[in-house]
Amino acid sequence: MAQSDLYLRSVLGFHILVTSSALFVFSTFAIFATKGGRWHILAGRYFYWTVILGSVSGVLLLFDPNFIDRWLPSEGQDFERSIGAWFAPASHLMKDLFFIFAAVAALVCVISGRRIWTRLRAAQDRVGADWRDWLLSLSLGTLAIFWAVIGAHDLGREGLHGDRLLISSVILFGFSVVDIWTFLSRPSPMEFPWHMLHGLKMSSVVVFLVLAYQFHLEDFLPGVLKSPYVTVAMIVVLLSTFFLLDRRKPMRD
Image (cartoon, rainbow, N blue to C red; front, top):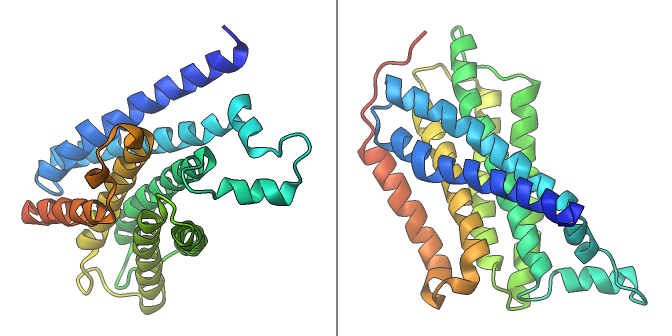
């Protein structure tokens, strides 16, 4: 077995294991458990770390030599033309870009979602923010703008993924705007629905994980499951389930 194949299989196997655990096990426990209760907190911690490990291992897949070769211009092809090929409809490179987007978006959202409770525990009369919160928020906004441009480009070329990228970009940009508003206005712990913002961010992580699976399995999915309306419906169902089951205990000190 070639060294590159061994690397790919090892990282890919680990990536599938941790992301599947996050998506199908820990997120389910977190959603159905009493919010703020023991099982919710425990499942949330495992969800947090498996998402981080899954995102990092997903990015490590980029170091597979076979992957890198697909990004480089072929012999006799100028680099500008190679860039154009990245965004061709149904391009394998476009799928790779989507995979990167899902991994990075899930990583930033899960860290940002957990930081809410860190900010609340450190709050006195007002909930503040430090450089880490600003970095996460600006990362969300930058990701949203960058991927909105990529999505619009793909949609203009009748690509397969532009609509889902645009929907995801709106979500990320909304988080960035709300975060910056809380940084500047510094609401008190009781003046803002912090648990709702936490739930929205963690739910968005689940959405990004589902989209990642959808990207990889789209060759086997019927056309109706590739529709942007399915993506929107998935978001609505997930959020409805989360908040309808919003049985909370008081936040612990």
